[in-house]
Amino acid sequence: MEKSLTQCMQEVLELKPANPSQLSPLVLAYIGDSIFDLVIKTYLIDTKGNMQVNKLNRFASGLVKAETQSKLIGFIEPQLTQEEEAVYKRGRNAKSYTSAKNASISDYRRATGFEALMGYLYLNGEFERMLVLIKAALDNWSVEGIK
Image (cartoon, rainbow, N blue to C red):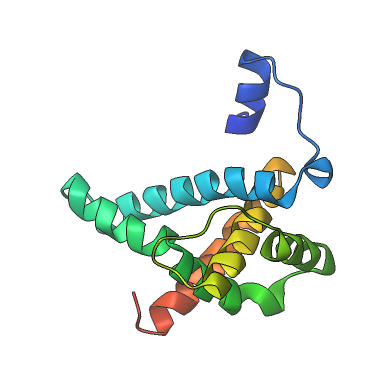
């Protein structure tokens, strides 16, 4: 069986597995932002095909911005387990010393919660659950006709 990217990184880079329960919600959001960006870029390459990188980047930027992430969490919030909801709320309520340039405070906080949840699921090795939630959010995004 193939190893996951996380398993390979731990093995090759000699990393100890992180315990996401012991990390601050802003640290979870930090890694969650990156993993969500990677998933979206992979998704776009598959759905949009071989197009100019600047066009792919515009699509990606539209999906990874705080305003969109705030809407995406709204679509999937009813599907979250109690544990996932608690992680989301910890991220949403975390005191951040930065803010988004082009987003409202509420969108920025909700997006931080979304990213914290993605980071938590990623670091917990719950890749399939993370992807199921992202797919549900993207499916709703498409149905809303906003995409």
